[in-house]
Image 1 (cartoon, rainbow, N blue to C red):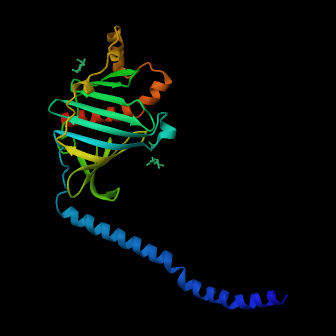
Image 2 (image 1 turned 45 degrees about the vertical axis):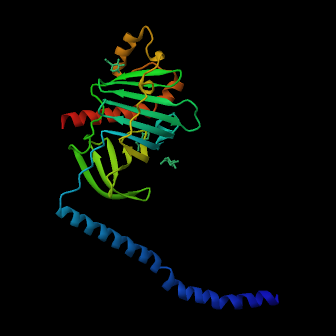
Length: 267
Ligand SMILES: *[C@@H]1O[C@H](CO)[C@@H](O)[C@H](O)[C@H]1NC(C)=O
Ligand SMILES: *[C@@H]1O[C@H](CO)[C@@H](O)[C@H](O)[C@H]1NC(C)=O
Ligand SMILES: *[C@@H]1O[C@H](CO)[C@@H](O)[C@H](O)[C@H]1NC(C)=O
């Protein structure tokens, strides 16, 4: 009883103090945030208008050969795809030999998936037991696929803590390049699978010399291969559901890249 009497008494000053200070302490926070936000937007706008006075920066052409290790996330995985959403991809880009290889490792999977793309439009997707062959009307991406025209500058952006220039192209891709070095940092494919790739390492000039790694295995060339391949042009392959899961996202990415190659060829 005695305590309950004291408590309200002890609390009252605190409460009234809190009430007194509340109007001065709390509302300014949102106001301060709003102010900071407005200031940031204004600063951004200033930077943008300063930028607008000069020509927008141009993307750096890709080196003719490189090896990149990329972390891949199919961000719309649960709705759009059934395959494992997280992958590590080794990309070997080899323009002098007109070929491109993606070595894809799904999370906790022992069987890597290969995507070997040739300039005649043929792509082989295979692992140790399955294979799919796709034909595209265009070859591999040229080094100038982005720098050669058609890229829309979207401004500066920070991704993974790295200061970047950002471009979009043809509604297919958003591409981040390190502002200081021109190295590729990240790209997002505009696709229902929401594929995002983050460049973890980038080694210009490094090629995969081992031709066996590029060679599609025997199970890509069954005896009755010809008919199947020709039907494959419509992308209506017959595949088991587990196979479909594995190709999911990989094909989507490679199809977009081929489209970009097509766009580069005509620009
Ligand atoms: C992958 O993308 C999804 C959707 O944006 C996100 O929730 C998830 O955290 C990402 N995973 C990783 C490991 O980055
Ligand atoms: C394209 O080139 C690859 C590699 O040389 C070959 O395996 C494939 O059969 C060729 N495709 C066509 C349609 O000629
Ligand atoms: C995610 O996938 C669903 C189902 O395919 C699709 O309707 C939706 O547009 C996708 N979201 C994005 C951002 O592409």
